[in-house]
Amino acid sequence: MSTSRKITLKCSDGEALEVDEAVALESQMIKKIIKDDCADNGILLPEVTSKILYKIIEYCKKHVESPKSNDCATGAVGDDLKAWDAEFVKVDQDTLFDLILAANCLNIKSLLDLTCQTVLGLTDGKTFEELVKWYNIKVDLEK
Image 1 (cartoon, helix red, strand yellow):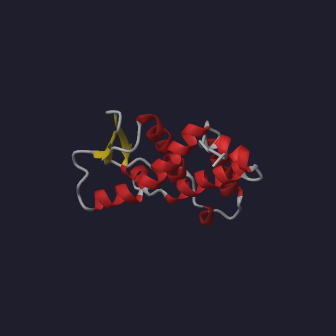
Image 2 (cartoon, rainbow, N blue to C red; image 1 turned 90 degrees about the vertical axis):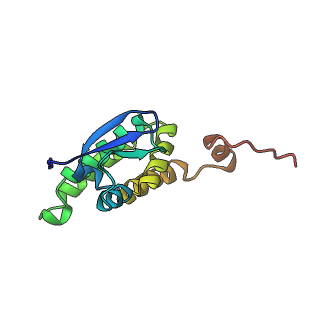
């Protein structure tokens, strides 16, 4: 999987991370920057902290390294990746929301779908009051 080209990603907290180009290309935003030949001095990600970028790199690397389900005669590979994804999103609420924002910003559709689906699953069946508390919404019901 390792390519000879490394891409430097500069986080909002000042940390710079080097990743294989194949991993970086999971992001459609980064893919466009690379295609436009604008990645030589690194790619600034002002919306993404290093903590979240490490998680995103972990996700993208796993998805790049995993054989595509149509490459395999059985669905075991796809099932393994689904199980890995399910474990990946077992994070605290703040991290989950940060992953959603970063996946949207970086245009990583599969990660955005996974994280949004996770929120849906976590909120399904909750009452209005439970949702207000879960999302930490300030509501004045007296008006």
